[in-house]
Image 1 (cartoon, rainbow, N blue to C red):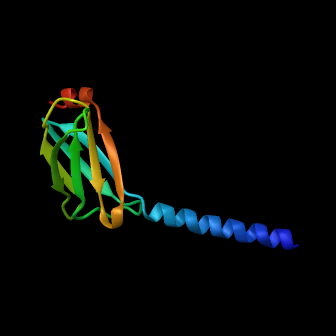
Image 2: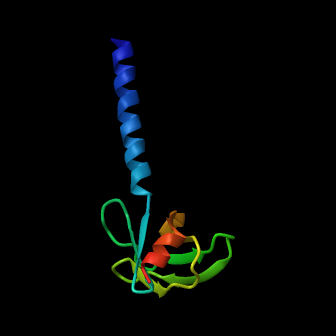
Amino acid sequence: MKTLSHLFILVVVTLLLSGTALAHKVNVFAYVEAGKVYTESYFPDGSPVEGGKVLVYDSQNNLLLEGVTDKKGLFNFAVPKVDDLTIVIEATMGHKNSFKLKKAELEAGR
Protein backbone atom coordinates (compact mmCIF):
# COMPACT_ATOMS: atom_id res chain seq x y z
CA MET A 1 0.00 0.00 0.00
CA LYS A 2 2.90 2.33 0.76
CA THR A 3 4.30 1.79 -2.75
CA LEU A 4 0.96 2.71 -4.30
CA SER A 5 0.81 5.98 -2.36
CA HIS A 6 4.40 6.83 -3.40
CA LEU A 7 3.52 6.12 -7.02
CA PHE A 8 0.44 8.35 -6.75
CA ILE A 9 2.51 11.20 -5.30
CA LEU A 10 5.11 10.79 -8.05
CA VAL A 11 2.43 10.97 -10.74
CA VAL A 12 0.84 14.08 -9.20
CA VAL A 13 4.19 15.87 -8.89
CA THR A 14 5.11 14.96 -12.48
CA LEU A 15 1.82 16.33 -13.77
CA LEU A 16 2.18 19.53 -11.80
CA LEU A 17 5.71 20.12 -13.05
CA SER A 18 4.83 19.41 -16.68
CA GLY A 19 2.01 21.96 -16.49
CA THR A 20 4.43 24.52 -15.12
CA ALA A 21 6.89 23.83 -17.93
CA LEU A 22 4.18 24.34 -20.54
CA ALA A 23 3.09 27.57 -18.89
CA HIS A 24 6.55 29.04 -19.47
CA LYS A 25 6.81 28.19 -23.15
CA VAL A 26 6.46 30.80 -25.89
CA ASN A 27 5.74 30.17 -29.58
CA VAL A 28 6.69 32.10 -32.68
CA PHE A 29 5.54 31.50 -36.25
CA ALA A 30 6.53 33.37 -39.41
CA TYR A 31 5.50 33.45 -43.05
CA VAL A 32 6.30 35.51 -46.15
CA GLU A 33 3.82 37.39 -48.29
CA ALA A 34 4.48 40.03 -50.95
CA GLY A 35 8.07 40.67 -49.86
CA LYS A 36 7.25 41.03 -46.16
CA VAL A 37 7.78 38.66 -43.27
CA TYR A 38 4.90 38.41 -40.81
CA THR A 39 5.44 36.99 -37.33
CA GLU A 40 2.98 35.84 -34.69
CA SER A 41 4.10 35.21 -31.11
CA TYR A 42 1.92 33.66 -28.43
CA PHE A 43 1.90 31.61 -25.25
CA PRO A 44 0.48 28.05 -25.11
CA ASP A 45 -2.81 29.36 -23.71
CA GLY A 46 -3.23 31.44 -26.89
CA SER A 47 -2.54 34.82 -25.31
CA PRO A 48 -0.33 37.09 -27.44
CA VAL A 49 3.22 38.08 -26.56
CA GLU A 50 2.74 41.82 -26.14
CA GLY A 51 5.94 43.88 -26.23
CA GLY A 52 8.14 40.87 -27.01
CA LYS A 53 11.52 41.54 -28.56
CA VAL A 54 11.94 40.08 -32.06
CA LEU A 55 15.46 39.49 -33.37
CA VAL A 56 16.20 38.42 -36.96
CA TYR A 57 19.46 36.68 -37.87
CA ASP A 58 20.86 35.47 -41.18
CA SER A 59 22.47 32.08 -41.79
CA GLN A 60 25.83 33.41 -40.54
CA ASN A 61 24.18 34.46 -37.24
CA ASN A 62 24.48 38.18 -38.07
CA LEU A 63 21.74 40.31 -36.50
CA LEU A 64 19.81 41.90 -39.37
CA LEU A 65 17.09 43.73 -37.48
CA GLU A 66 15.06 43.82 -34.31
CA GLY A 67 11.63 45.01 -33.32
CA VAL A 68 8.80 44.64 -30.82
CA THR A 69 5.50 42.76 -31.05
CA ASP A 70 2.26 44.70 -30.82
CA LYS A 71 -0.70 44.04 -28.49
CA LYS A 72 -1.76 41.11 -30.67
CA GLY A 73 1.74 39.54 -30.63
CA LEU A 74 2.36 40.55 -34.25
CA PHE A 75 5.42 42.05 -35.91
CA ASN A 76 6.28 42.39 -39.62
CA PHE A 77 9.17 43.65 -41.68
CA ALA A 78 10.43 43.84 -45.26
CA VAL A 79 12.64 40.91 -46.24
CA PRO A 80 16.08 42.18 -45.19
CA LYS A 81 18.10 39.55 -47.06
CA VAL A 82 17.26 36.50 -49.16
CA ASP A 83 18.91 33.91 -46.95
CA ASP A 84 17.89 31.38 -44.32
CA LEU A 85 16.59 33.51 -41.45
CA THR A 86 16.24 32.72 -37.77
CA ILE A 87 13.53 34.72 -36.05
CA VAL A 88 13.85 34.83 -32.27
CA ILE A 89 11.19 35.96 -29.81
CA GLU A 90 12.22 37.07 -26.33
CA ALA A 91 9.13 37.35 -24.14
CA THR A 92 8.64 38.24 -20.49
CA MET A 93 10.53 36.49 -17.69
CA GLY A 94 13.25 35.19 -20.02
CA HIS A 95 10.98 33.09 -22.23
CA LYS A 96 12.56 32.59 -25.62
CA ASN A 97 12.01 30.60 -28.80
CA SER A 98 12.95 30.74 -32.48
CA PHE A 99 11.58 29.97 -35.92
CA LYS A 100 13.62 29.08 -39.02
CA LEU A 101 12.45 30.66 -42.26
CA LYS A 102 14.15 29.03 -45.26
CA LYS A 103 15.63 30.97 -48.18
CA ALA A 104 13.29 29.12 -50.56
CA GLU A 105 10.27 30.42 -48.62
CA LEU A 106 11.58 33.98 -48.89
CA GLU A 107 12.10 33.57 -52.64
CA ALA A 108 8.60 32.09 -53.10
CA GLY A 109 6.99 34.89 -51.07
CA ARG A 110 8.34 37.73 -53.20
